[in-house]
Image (spheres, rainbow, N blue to C red):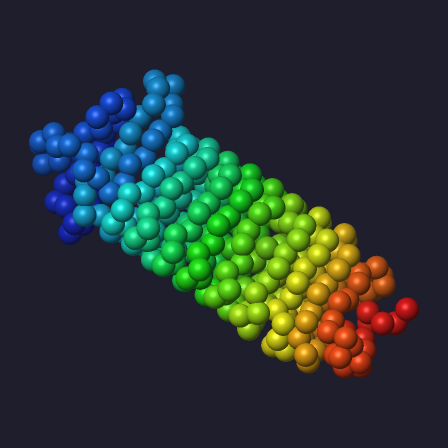
Length: 287
């Protein structure tokens, strides 16, 4: 048993581990039914346990469960609207987390280094995936993003070496630097035309990436977006005008010039002449 002070929300709450039957909460010296906003299942030597928070919780504080080594399954029930920064950082045994439909905001690094997490569904209403949200989640295989999404922050899914399935909604406008760097199982990526900013190194070192469809617009692209993508075979860019590059920087590192010969660039037939003369793009035609 331990004490935790929730400041102004509750004067004093006792949270105790209970064998799962009908989870109970001890609050202010009374045992009440667990009509809770958060229920956390723990797996430890004595068996399966619950941690329960009382109702009316709308926010999980920053670092609240950071570095917990006993969390395996988390269900956040309806009513919670915000998960604080690094709330579940380093929960290495966490395999599953179910988020409520009421969720609106997720803090930086909220699920970072949850190395056993396999799948994550972000509910409708969330507009921003913050930086480092799922970085270094080595077992993460699938992510479902909502149609409400506008922004994916830098390093949000970096070093997710098993990530092979993720959707990019038509509402997405920005992908930050290194957002998907070192994601070892991405093979085919289709980016929506709604994206107006694709920052530097966004898909760098995705070793299995074979094909990517860029937004069909002429918005500026960041530097070295595909450096380290040694298996990239096709880039599709159906913009009528060739997109420009930040500081005229290339798609690949200068040491990777062979990639312009190895990789096929697909453009609109009527725009091919423009791409042949455009900075960076013209490298694909120097054969």
